[in-house]
Figure 1 (cartoon, rainbow, N blue to C red):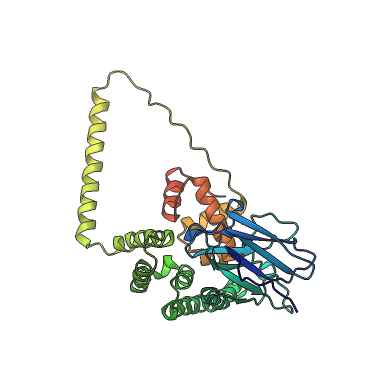
Figure 2 (cartoon, helix red, strand yellow):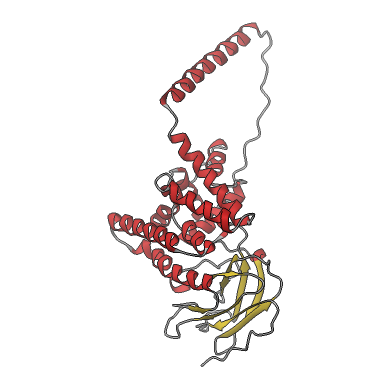
Length: 345
């Protein structure tokens, strides 16, 4: 039986527990911050704030007093010996991380099932209620990463729809704003925002009331505004499209006329200045496949199912694509790729 030191009298946060750590895993546990909601499943060594060492019996401890005072999401993870700090988003046999909600005074214990093969397999928490809520949420999300094993398309579709229904219901009944936020950002927002706009807006109102000024609240409203723009475009009156079409035809005619006049009055041929050929970013083969699927309007979950990879891996690749393209979001990535005439192989 693992004995824990008392938290009493300690100024700062403390995380203790016990992992199932076989020989293939490194004897370290990393704590990293999640600064943006889009980084909920991405791994970046620059976000690591503490490293703890796992003892032979699996026990570990991480403590400090350098966290912000407000509650935020953090990732606690381990990595295999042949991996680097980047590989923090692996599921299945490499399910090696959990999410926690911490502030500078949080005290929490993490216990894993000794009969489970994964380091954080079937984990439980002892501590504040938000982390208990995150653990309950993980029991909904974790099975979804096996979607790629489903053989039939209709079965896959129904399973994904059930997951999203369960996440919305979980958020509706959750008392902690951050836990409800974690549930909602795990939904397929690209697909469900036009259908569930009211539920997304209700969470926004809850965040404004309970977490005004929080970085996550501002980040969430940026996501809301982005999807509002997408949905608003689809509901424009037909006369707007007709006017736009008429203007476009006039503009094309005007440009053609001006160009024709220029050719007639020009006496000396002029050579147009050469335009430098855009340099194609160096994509990996997997990134090229994912970019092509993004251009085909596939959602993250559809990409994961098509390529037989985990959803978290898709999100990691997409974040790297954004960085290489210089894009802030999916819409900008598609625009840049099409403007620069990038062709995936």
